[in-house]
Image (tube, rainbow, N blue to C red; front, side, top):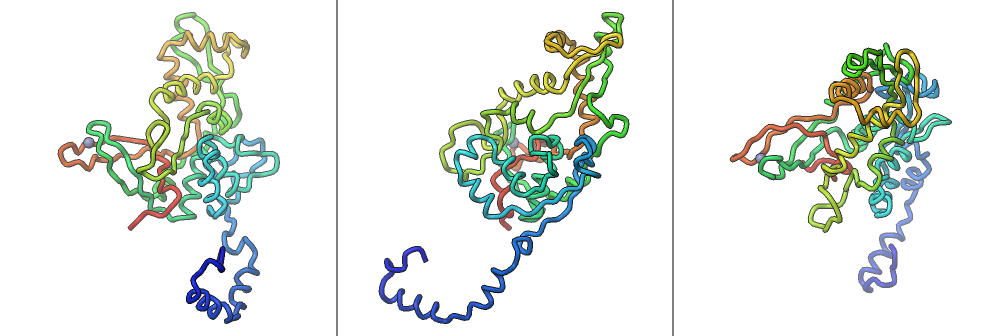
Length: 310
Ligand SMILES: [Zn+2]
């Protein structure tokens, strides 16, 4: 009751009668429960198994709890939503990271896994999302069972337990008659933050309201290209030429000169050793005159924060 005095007399009398019934034991019993009772922490194993976290997270086990009203408040905070920080704030609220670690230190693949896991334990695994057909532009709604993501979990590659990893570059090695390798590391939340700065990755605003930019789900085409370049520049921290490692300014100059055969080699290598989940899904356009099949990345749509309407 925010303002009981503003109520009409008749309603006021009803309210007074209802609340005069002071059998509040039941409520007191509920309120006396620890927070943990309502939203218990549970253990989850991250795809990385904790391998790349300096032994701070043995076996990759951490504690998570469902999203609560604290996350509702963040979603209502336009500053947080506009900053693109909402997903990281959710992790800070619902994940107990080991001492010495922040959300910035999480591997990108673990971060994605956590977000969908939190969604599952909060609203269940039925996830409804909207996608625009690339051919005809029709918006279709699709159902996806988030538990299917568990089949796509990729763990750490036992051959590469420490960073940086070394990947031999075939084209430039052949061309220069030397042995040239890229020294790469895995991308973390901090890197993703730097790459997408200024882009709203999730947009929980309901349809029908004015938007200031882009599509509702994801990153614009232009910034995706930008991220593609930054991705390599960030992941490659140096080169090894005939056994000698260097990581100074010349690193970026050499990246600029790489043949696509070598950048593809780097990209495929990174994909092959990056722990995480595969969020790509196949859908069919629901416009019967089109019915095109296409693949997309599972978007963080507005239903991320609420159960699917059934
Ligand atoms: Zn279509």
